[in-house]
Image (cartoon, rainbow, N blue to C red; front, side, top):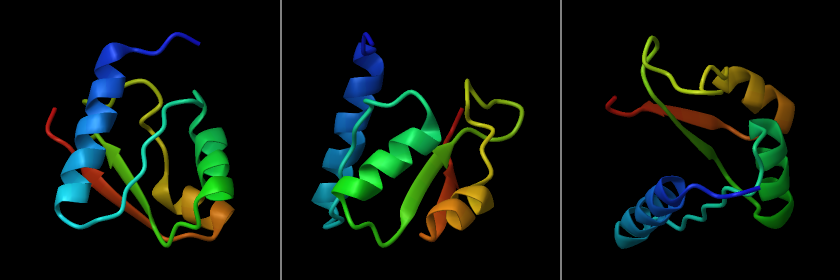
Length: 86
């Protein structure tokens, strides 16, 4: 799968900002399916929480219409959803 330069740059920037604030963070864009990506991440990192960043309803992009409660139930890890500016 070809990676988008914008997506990779955004991931690096987010991880760097979180690290600068003292929040251990890891970002990976390997999986195209959200649930596969979470499953892969949880196999490699014992997460205490999942941070889910999406655009507000009506401005959501491809595959952002995910239910955080479904993720929490499926993986047994608390999910915090934050809306980002469109």
